Image (cartoon, rainbow, N blue to C red):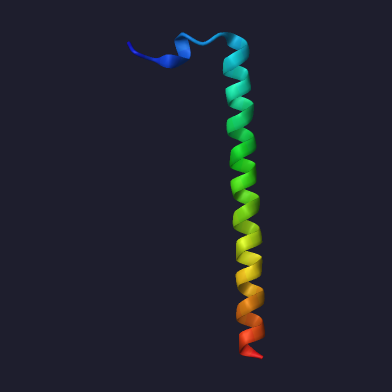
Length: 47
């Protein structure tokens, strides 16, 4: 089994988990912001 997770220490693994959760949150927020800006542009174009 060439699983890299088994070679890293427990601390590194938890840090990776936190980083993954954080990046997922950031991506989600970015999508919300982009969607909001897009809606604002569409709304102003329709007026």
